[in-house]
Amino acid sequence: MESFNTFEVYFIMIKLVIFDLDGTLVDSKTDITNALNFAVEPLELEKLTIEKTVSLVGEGVTRLIEKVIGADRAGLAPEVLNRFIDYYSKHLTDFTRPYPGVRETLEKLSFCKRAVISNKRESLSKRLLEELGLLGCFDIVYGSDSAGEKKPSPKPLLRMLEHFSVSPDEAVIVGDSNFDIEAGKAAGVRTVGVSYGYRDVSFLRDADYIIDDISALIPILNELGKSRSAFIRA
Image 1 (cartoon, helix red, strand yellow):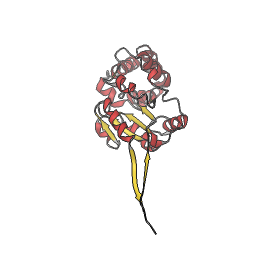
Image 2: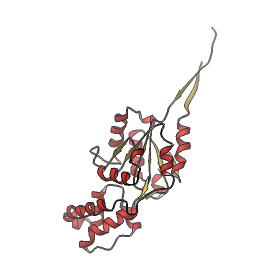
Image 3: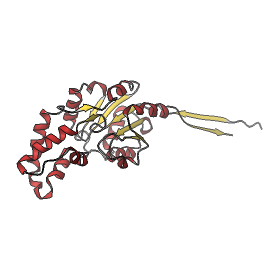
């Protein structure tokens, strides 16, 4: 009997790229710090530095307020939160700007769906992107209140995959914190950590890739779009 070899090759194209917002697409730490200091001013707490704020962000504004005021003032959290939202809503982009290369990179991703999953509220996320002229770059924007759970839960990612009818193998999440990486891993999505954001690079150690510049995402997507497997069957 004649024997022969058959090559089986399959291709996985990246159809969806999901971005974190703060610390990944935009540098918003000054505006967040200013809003926090305004919110806690009546409590006469020590003024927060930008560095301190950066160490606390990532889990959404409610959790951020709780960490700033401490457990002994937990009852004041709703009032402080309202002050924060009121101020921040009026000063979203006083100092907030996209990181270098963000606009250009997003323009190069026209071959796939582009999305944002932020732990900032959806309304604020959309307004921020709109004020910076970036909202039109995205097909959908999720915030902390969009899917019932926020990162590091995989639920927002899974819902987004379902929305676009995309498999986990066809998606990538890009973020600056362990919450992004954990959410991506739990959803079965490839993960890219950015080292220039709010978290030390040590928090990104479980990411599939780590990049120092957002433009470095393009070669990674090109590589992922190539053949993923080739084997011989006799």
